Each structure stands twice: as C-alpha cells, then as structure tokens.
Length: 460
Ligand code: GDP
Ligand code: MG
Image 1 (cartoon, rainbow, N blue to C red):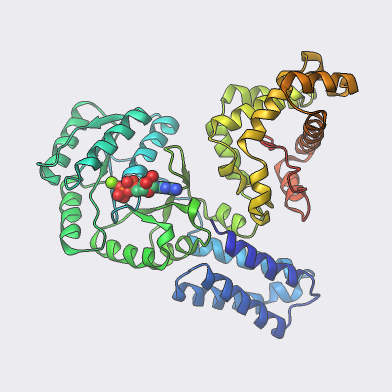
Image 2: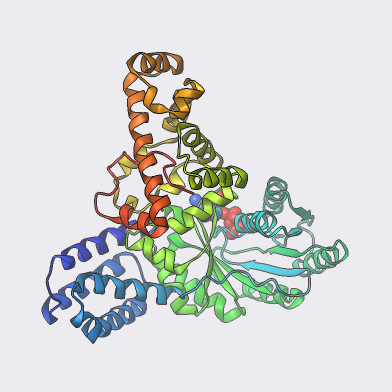
C-alpha cells in the first residue's frame, strides 16, 4: 500500500533536502507537489485541502524558519500531519464489556467481512487467548454461511450454525444465548452485504445492531474502491453507531487514499488492515507506523511484531540471549530465521515494511523469493556444525563440497556467505546501538544494496 504516494513524496522531499532554506517560493512549489501526490493517491478532496493548508501554516511558522535543515523539518511536518489525519494512536478493540463481548461487522458485499471475521477470530484466540464464537447472519447466500464454517474450522474457533431459512435477528439472538451458556469471551457476528448501499440492507443491520447491542460495530471496506470507500463509509456511519473500521485488501492497493480519508470523513478510527487473503493477514493499524511507511522510513515496529507473532517465541528468546551473551550470530541462527520466515507466510508481505524497500522496484523484490530462501536453507543444511558456527573456516574445497551437497553452485555459496556477513554486521550494530541506530542505518539512502538484503535479514 502507498507505494505511489511514497514515491511521489520521496521525490518531493529529496529535492527539498537539497535546498538551503524554505522560501515562500519553493514552499509553494513543494506544497503543490504534495497536493498532487495526495490527489493521485485518491485521497478525498476535502482531506487534501485541509492537509495542505495545515502543512503550509506550520511550514511558514517559526520552527521551520529557524531550523538548520528546513527539508527535514518539512518532512517532520508532513509526517505529523499524516499521523493526525489517520488518528494519532492505535485504537484496538474494546472488549471490556461483560462477556460475551459482541463484535459485529457491516459493509458491502465482497468488502471482506467474512474473511475479516475469521482473521479477527484468529487474532483474538491466538493473541488474547479469547474463547471465540462466530456466527453468520448472511441468509441470502447459503455459500456465505459455509464459507464462515470452513474458515472457523481453519482458525480453530467455535462456529454457531445457521441456515438460509432463518431470520437474521433470530440467528443473532440464538447465537448470543449460546455464547452466554458456553462462556464464550467474544461473539463475532458476520452480516450480509449488498452490492450497493440500499435501505433494506441498512434496516437489517440496524435491527441486528439493536438485537445484539455490540461493544464493537466495525465497518469493513475494500481499500481498492478508493473514493467510493469514503462515500460508503459515510452512509454506514450515518446508519449505525460505528466504533471503527477494518480496511481490507490493502495488499493490492498501491494508492492508499482510503486510509487517509476515512478517519477524516467519519471520525471513526481504522482499527485493522487486511493485508492478504490468508487468515493471518490482519494487522492492527498504527497511524505513526503507517506514516513512516508512506514516507519510506520503513515500518520496523510492525515487522518486529509480525515476526514475534509468527515465530517461536522460545527461538527468538534464545537468539536474543545469545546475542546479548556476546557469542554472536552464526549461520545456524541465520538458517533458523529463514525457517521462521517460511512460517510467517513468505517474504512478500514482509518486504514492504523494510526501510527503503518501498522504493525498490518490483523486479528486485521478485528476486528475493521464497524459492531463494529454500535454496539458502539447503546450502546451510549441507554444512557441518563447525562450518555453521565458524563460517570463516569455509575454504574453497569446503565450498565445492557444500555446493555439491546442496545441488547449487560455488557462487551460490559465496553469495550466501556474503549475505550472512552483512546480516552479522547489522546484528552487531543492533546490539550496540539498539533499534534507533539500526533504523537510521537502514533508513539512509543506499543503506540496503538492492538484493543484498539477506532474506529474513532483520534482527528480532
Ligand atoms: P464479504 O462479502 O464482505 O463477506 O467478503 P469476503 O470475506 O467473502 O471477501 C471477498 C473476497 O475478498 C474474498 O475472495 C477474499 O479472499 C478477499 N479478501 C478479503 N480480505 C482481503 C485482503 O485483505 N486482501 C486480499 N488480497 N483479499 C482479501
Ligand atoms: Mg460474507
């Protein structure tokens, strides 16, 4: 998401950094480009207007005039404004009601409601250890109920059966009763959508809302619908007391305008992003991190969280302790990290969050694929324990043996060793300077040689 906006803003900022001072003149020019960038990203016009106005006011203010690096000061202003527009902090789900806490989703057909219910169920079960029940009130499409049944089994939560000949409100009431009796912590209610906003649909979700009295009423919307997403959000916000938004399909959306507009238009926070079709592909929405991502600073924090969720905590701990004890990072650790990458559903979803990756061409991204990871793992598997611990002993003849054993070429082994060295260096820096320093290092232009980033090459 946001790759277009990132690219545009990056160009603007780069030019500005080269300027000694911010003058009225170059500020006008810069603001015009920021405006264009936002419009191209499909951000709603009123939001663009206010954004540019606020940035201008602050840019003309004292803090920038007095700053020695007006370019950087300007970037900070744009970042602050991005954060403000998206809502400052992350609003998680508020499930503090007496259980079962009811969460209901609403939105157009195909927005991703059913998928999001499954993702949320998984998230709540895995992360918050909640006992979750899901139910579908989509009686118009029998396949929709089956879809949720299948997904519930996949994410290992309880499913309350319903059928097409029942009334949505009756289903909801029965599910709620069941959840009470079985002591579920959370009841997630999936609803039917239509292709367009219409009165019958609104009346139905309103009835459901009344019957369920949910603690969270989440509007699910497809980010790819751009400006339409904003209009639909408005309609639902008027019909229902929404508590938040789930923005789906952000993995396929290069523009990202909806993320910047929805909060402004509805006043409701985006709580989660859908980032893929799999049930794991759900991320809590953090305005600050997303703003960093837009400005190409990379989203290391989300990455770390994702890694923590996807990997074995024990392994991560072990690595941490080892690094702290000064033993250093060896090929065994490298292999383990790559294995964990596999568990997290591949590299693709991680790439966008690495600092600097936003600007990388798709071609380069494609080179670091999951096949490549499998090959690297095969190479390490062909090494002896000593070679893994002390890669320096790997001589020419050892390299030939390893290549033959793993069905690769000597140059593949060389490349692996080079990638490992880079990663080891990064780990050292990480130990010395902590996250801030690493981010600075990575964030710097050219900090990551294209393709030189070892797959899974991030410290935990
Ligand atoms: P509903 O009609 O609102 O219940 O929508 P569904 O949950 O059935 O989703 C419609 C389609 O969108 C399905 O093919 C999903 O796999 C897909 N989908 C949902 N969320 C995401 C997402 O975050 N990313 C991607 N790529 N696809 C998604
Ligand atoms: Mg559905």
